Image 1 (cartoon, rainbow, N blue to C red):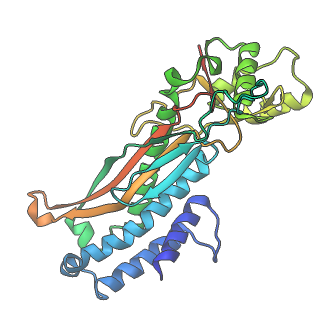
Image 2 (tube, rainbow, N blue to C red; image 1 turned 135 degrees about the vertical axis):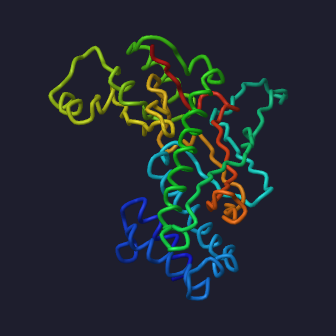
Image 3 (cartoon, rainbow, N blue to C red; image 1 turned 45 degrees about the horizontal axis):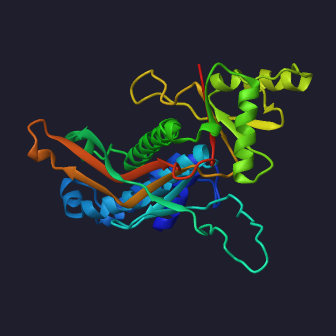
Length: 329
């Protein structure tokens, strides 16, 4: 089984689709087990693993990025851009200036006019190491009961959750950097939201935008015209109106902070942005690192697995008007 197929199987398990055959979690587990058994020489035991563990981890590290990206893409693709870079590479992102060039009127015989810079702005995203540490009992490992495929997918889901939280925080924490015309704070007001929408449209030179928010925030969006039967059907189906004065609404994915019952995504804000406007840049730097601590080096004889990935996320704040922000109270 080629590594590329393992990557595709991981993607299919996340998306629930298949491009070649029908890949499931069971298929992925079996394929990874088969490939691991091959690299350890056909026999699984403590010694064959110790002799070949880096080959085992190389298999898992090939699968992990695809699984993370697939999980994130299904949730955050409308407004987040994902980039994989080599270790140490500078991740420059250019932000195009969408404003029109001023056209000046000058008297005949003179060209004394003000220049406008052609290029837009750029920025970089800082990355940091993010780690996951897991352990298992030695006898479980020796008996071959550690499912490396299931472990990989859970680690991928954990990283996706963490990055998703970073995306949400990057947007929420950018409020102070959003231009005055593109933000507001207070109880929901139709005219206020419509004003933000118009400013974002004008700034980006587009005819339509989208509104994102938690279901709780979206439920506060209403208009002065009342609700048609179709709108009431949408509220019954979605929990909020599907369209506000011609602008579609979409619910942000929600989750708990890890091992708590606290929501990870703020529930009281609305984001207004053009379709396919990637207002958050996410960078994965270098390849994942996977290693283990030998059970014989610990008094409790437990095997520890460490997974490391360099990740960063930042919202575009170097230029006003890319998106709008409404904090509801």
